[in-house]
Length: 257
Ligand SMILES: NC(=O)c1ccc[n+]([C@@H]2O[C@H](COP(=O)([O-])OP(=O)(O)OC[C@H]3O[C@@H](n4cnc5c(N)ncnc54)[C@H](O)[C@@H]3O)[C@@H](O)[C@H]2O)c1
Image 1 (cartoon, rainbow, N blue to C red):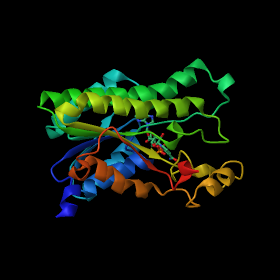
Image 2: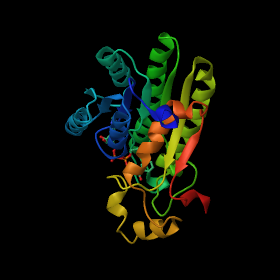
Image 3: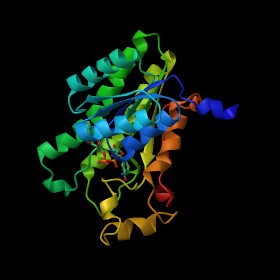
Image 4: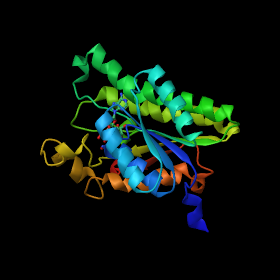
């Protein structure tokens, strides 16, 4: 049956930044589809809360403290995840930050931090998970969270570091998909538009930001975080078996205009 292809029954998924926002939505969506979930998160309180909510859905879940800026932390997390559940089938590289600042004033520290979380952290996750997937004979699915900001320049916020990091995530995704296709590892990205999380929601009612953003969205509203869950399950499941190297845009039409 067609819906069986969306099942994640018996799979093990790792989600970085799974404590809140989109990451939490991905954890719960994977769990609803049948997967056990590793919550890899910097914040122990939110990370453990997501674990409890996954467990309430009847799935196994563990919190593993993770700082994606640190390669060693990401590698240790993948190792602990394999110890906990025996394997990893799905990796969602979701953790991300933004810093708004006119480009001419961005400090070296801030530039590096955005790159460390949004780009380097994604690469460390892909690399560590792929080593595990290759060692057990190949197969697996990786999804990286990019952004529409990797395709266009959003305004009026000034976020050159964020835009650049997300464009790089999209090309990293293609590069890794090309390298690992022969081993049955699919690598895709999701490019969300404005979604109602801590990162963007506080600005929706601000005339300076939301007042500019929302009229420019063809669907005339921001996305609800839960609207990303089905796409994440699609990309993690057999339903997308011929999709690799793709960046799927989910933005209410923002980037078509
Ligand atoms: N909200 C949006 O409008 C939007 C749009 C496009 C893309 N995105 C992307 O979606 C992803 C999730 O964003 P969100 O809106 O849920 O943000 P959020 O700020 O609500 O959540 C981010 C999560 O990542 C965690 N995190 C941050 N730094 C970390 C680190 N070094 N190591 C481990 N975890 C870390 C945070 O603790 C938090 O739980 C990000 O990659 C973001 O760039 C968001």
